[in-house]
Image (cartoon, rainbow, N blue to C red):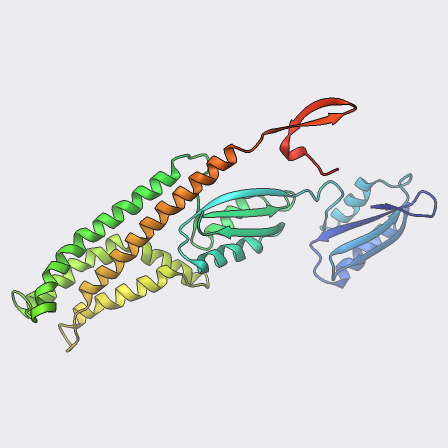
Length: 318
């Protein structure tokens, strides 16, 4: 906002949200011109901005804003354009495709200026206009992609997620190790003990709970990525393990080799890698939190020759 050279008139440049065409801009401009004190009202649909020259003695900023709102549009008046920053912990991300999907979903939320997602720390850093959107909207955008947002007030959320990952790894290997031991004679000596039929039947049955019970969260995550128009690493693992397991039942009706046992190995190695990745992420997050605790909370500034203590986020350059 700036002062005009002509008398006491001022020029106001504000964003206007909700316009869909040039007619919208024209209706706003015409309504403003009807108000006393408005000297100029140029509304541009292409830039979503209004340039208004007005006499502050005859019309106030509040009246200008109300005039636009009466037409069901949303002006961002001086003082309203303040943005907030929020950090959210995203659960369920496994690869760069997950990061891209979450960033894209957050970027589509009205009022979001920027959204940066870090896979290593499982954090999303979002800058948004609280007058346009809310944290609830941001969380819903993330959940719409098949991921979840942790409650930061729950201090042990990391420990709970790590414990879940650990249990899945243990359960997976409880099925996989017996299968490996059973497959060793066949792999080394070509002997399917006790008979080829019982060997294939046993491997197929034993691998089923590993894939469809222990591996269900992976399958669910992969399917969610497809339904939301993206593809993540879980989709690749889910497709590989399910297709490999299906060769087990298929081997009874067609001359096809049984790879059901291999599917459990793929899943177990994947879950083990995820567990150690989660462990590393947790250590990184804890280190970052320790560094943040070392941040100076208050700052001393000179006001009229006297020292005054203020919060760090209120310090401005100059």
